[in-house]
Amino acid sequence: MPSSDARPIPAASPVIGEEEIDAAVRVMRTGRVVQGPEVAAFEAGFAELVGGAHCVAVNSGTSALHLLLLALGIGPGDEVIVPSFSFAASANAVRLVGADVVFADIEPDSFCLDPAAVEAAITPRTAAIMPVHLYGHPAAMDRLMPLAEKHGLAVVEDACQAHAAALDGTPVGAFGSGGTFSFYPTKNMHALEGGMVTTGDAEVARTLRLLRNQGMEQRYANEIVGANMRMTDVSAAVGRVQLTKLDGWTERRRANAAYLDGHITAPNVVTPTVAEGARHVYHQYTVRIRGDRDAAMARLSEAGIGNAVYYPTPIHRLKPYWEPDQKAGRGWELPETERAAAEVVSLPVHPALTAEDLERIVTVVNGLGESL
Ligand SMILES: Cc1ncc(COP(=O)(O)O)c(C=O)c1O
Image 1 (cartoon, protein in one colour):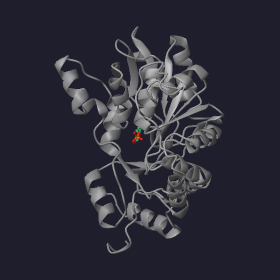
Image 2 (tube, protein in one colour):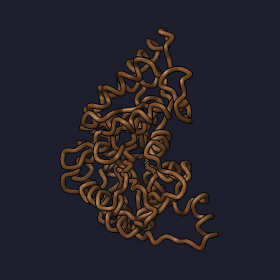
Image 3 (spheres, helix red, strand yellow):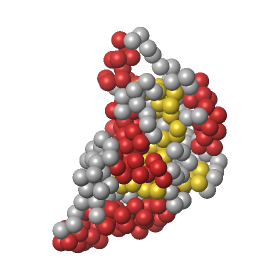
Image 4 (cartoon, helix red, strand yellow):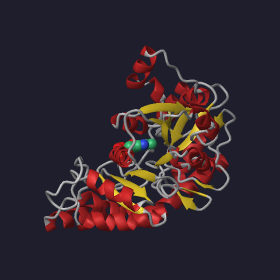
């Protein structure tokens, strides 16, 4: 077992290198810093990741979800089916547009929405399904899209953790009515902070462009009510640099995950599975601990191995969701969500890991033993 004074291996390692800094400074020197040429170029570059869909850059992944729901006309009286096993932003965006969140359970292997649970949750008020491509694994779009078509529902892909993930060759963000990406620093690529909406529908794209900028395309000729959710050119310039590195980083993440898959042999640690046809981009490498998770995490931390639980509390148990449901006498049966929240731990998988780091992670994880 490595000694506790060995170099700590962080859970994530965002890159703000010389190229990113130079790009940011270059833009600041131009004096054109808000939604200018860099944003347009970033949108054009990102379109290549999503099969040429229209791309609209905004200031965060949450804003991307919020604006996409608005652009699709989803609001009060509508229901949106969302996994409870996600970051709160997925459900928050639904509530922010005044629609109701309906939680559906996940599939235990992928940690993503279970199409059977989604179908059971559809009501006459359902307007949309929001699959979350959690941890970088694509949701079961091959089964969710036919369901949405059958019931005439919009599909809002939350791809905030899944840049360049794909299913059967189709990139996430190109399946649904629209997709959303986050460029928060710990994501597979970042823009300091930022988000992107992708859509194949030109009308939706135009509405998104209006919504992010006070309803204006022409200055002071406001067409609709909108917000200020613009991306800065500084962010876009950083995002463009990161975009050039994404392929290499993704391959590193996938290779790191393959190493961990092949070497973690502890019987009470379940390594992640990948659905047939799925390209997993390993935003997180998430295992299940069958035993005392707190003890496992304490041992990992003692050995300097970064680790974290995403997410310890399912969204339906968070106060803004739990309290109104309790008041209304409403409850959700989400056994796979509850189990995942109790069992998961994410281990380092980021591209900055060295061969030595990977060996150390494996040694510590395999040393967790049967006592857990
Ligand atoms: C699944 C998911 N959805 C939405 C978001 C929101 O993205 P942002 O933090 O850029 O607002 C995140 C990022 O944290 C996320 O992980």
